[in-house]
Every structure is written in structure tokens, then in C-alpha cells.
Image (cartoon, rainbow, N blue to C red; front, top):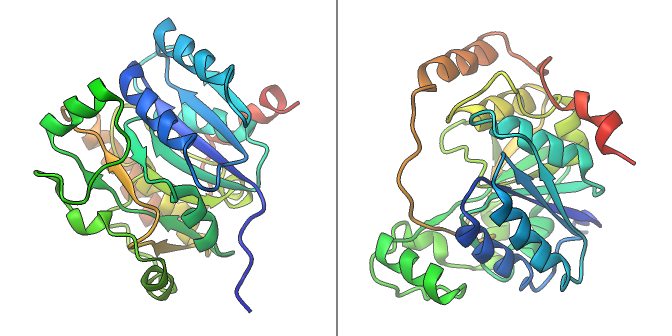
Length: 273
């Protein structure tokens, strides 16, 4: 008998001061064939334009939409995710970045692919700069497979049957771990104390989180030909913090870490009702 997927799912969307891109992400989220149970915006300190955008969607939303904001004290992605996950009411968490356009079966595919004892690493389709500009202008969320300049085009192909066959394999590799398309059971996240807030600046917080899950016996599963998401073009983030973050990742690997002290547990009293 096929394992049953989670009954409820929280979609966590991370964002920082790019409301035009977040608008596309939200449009795609509200156009899902199987909508999430709730949407939580994990905001790393955006200005009032982002709050206004979220409010405009909340008035027309058919599902709960929450805006979890923290002060802008630099790049603190781990903290913004932890706050959102602590607030979440659902058993399963899907995380995307606020510059991702979700194919209409994205949430359905993540829930269908979820299995106890594993987390899901999805892939992404890289959209070219010119087409990204067009999408931002026209609010287009249906990306044609034949669009010129798309990178990783094979990742745009959705074949659910083949995806089910390929998705049975679990592993411990850290290659290609990216939080822009990631899902896991909320309790598994809590068991490793969420994302490590010692990470500040861009880079490696996703991989270190995966290390602790894997060391705890929660293995990685790659989803191919399913859970399709399109990444809008943007300039690369500054990587000034990468050397320090690499050291934190190396320490987690070396120590076979299953828990981080500076994580999600600090938010439960203030975030949960």
C-alpha cells in the first residue's frame, strides 16, 4: 500500500526587499492545484512595501497567510526560517525562496513524495535575465518549457510516474543542498533544533541543517521530474561570510552533529499561541 502523505502542509517563503519577485511567488502559491494549509512569509527585515504586498493578498486569500518579520540586522536567513517554522501549525514544511515561481502541482508533488525518515531536496529551473524581467513586468507565472535561455531545462519536465520510481532512493550526499526547494516533517526539524543561527551572511546554512538531519537518521531524497520551481534571475549574493560559514559546516560534519544550540527552540514560547 502506498504510504499516505502528510495531512497538512505549511509553505514557508523567505524574502528580503524584493516585493516584485515575492508577488510572483505568491501568485503561484495561490494558484496551486492542491493549496498548502497555510502560507508563512519569513521576512528578514524588509521595508513596508513587502508588508503592504502581503496585506493585499491576505484580504483575498482563501487560506491563512502570515507575515513573520524580524528586524534588519544583516543577513539572518536561519533566524527568519526558524521564526516561521516555530509559528507553523502544520505537520509538514515546504520551504522556498521568495524569488521562486512554483509550477501549479508543486505542493501536491511535495506532499505526495513525503516519507517518514527522510527530507526532500527539490530542484530548480534557472530563468534567464531577460525572461525574468518580462515575468516581473507582466506577472506571468506559467513558464513554457521551450522558453529561450532556460538553464537546467530538464528540471522543468514533470513526469509524476517516473518521479515516484526515482524518488525511492535515499542518501547522505550534501551536494546541491539548497533551501530554495526543500521540505521536511516539522518534528524532524525541531529534533535537530532547526537552522543554526550561528550562520550569518550567505552560504552553507542549508547544508549544515542537512548534516544534522542525516546524522540523526533522517536521510535525503532527491525529487526529480516533480515539484517543479523556477528561479528568477538575480545578481549573486555577496559571499564575504562564506569562509566562516564553511568552518561551521566542517565542524558539524567532523563532530557528527545532530543538534545546534542556537536554533529554533528560543521561539516557541513567543510564536505559538
